[in-house]
Image (cartoon, rainbow, N blue to C red; front, side):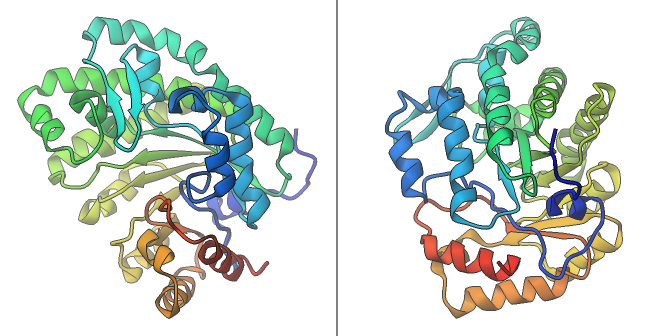
Length: 344
């Protein structure tokens, strides 16, 4: 139980409060741009065992909070832990990213739902350790990959562009719908477990919403997000939720109207005026600084930060990136932006 009588600023923003200096955190803030992260990563046997080691995962979750005045920590894990728990082989090739084995039969995947909480229990322990060490004024974020994004990896067997997965969704609609159903239930149980372990906010990462026509966006992104949240509420989870459908483009308006998220994650292509319209519709914005600009630094970075603050700080807003921080981002660029935004 937190001892502070004042809720963390991130939670207050998600409840609709606006700040002159908005709360700030960065996607992938616990990661390869920090030398202390790289040092610990070298001690782990492989990336999956790293994610499932509560001692190491808690330490790297806390590292960015020690360096920067972030308003939140996000648990160190990976979106591909769900297919691993469901029974699909998952591993990471050095310098190449994730690889997944053949997709198991649908009945085996369905049976695997009951194993998700046991196999991913180390993530709960990571959250407990972080919450015990984190200052009460900083929020703790749990997360999962969205069903469609996770399914694209499961179908293709690796990361990268996803045309094969989209083609599969056209060619095998009933099979894809069954897989989406399985992922909704498994993900809901996983996120509920994170909530019980101390997460105060949950984020749904939809990394591959880009390129979907409006009917397929509704089928594969909007409806599954709404159903996932409804299932979480059935499981007794009442935490605020941030939806991040990266690449949604014009579909974002319909998504914001149909999916009951408190926070709406924006990617780098979102116009400032469009964000203001979404705020006026009752959503807290999160995003959308270009990670490439953060890496580049200089006057262009300073100018864009000021433009975003001027456009969005009058409404509820969480300053963040439009995608994850890049590994070769200079630490002093991060420090400069975070301290400008936070005023600390």
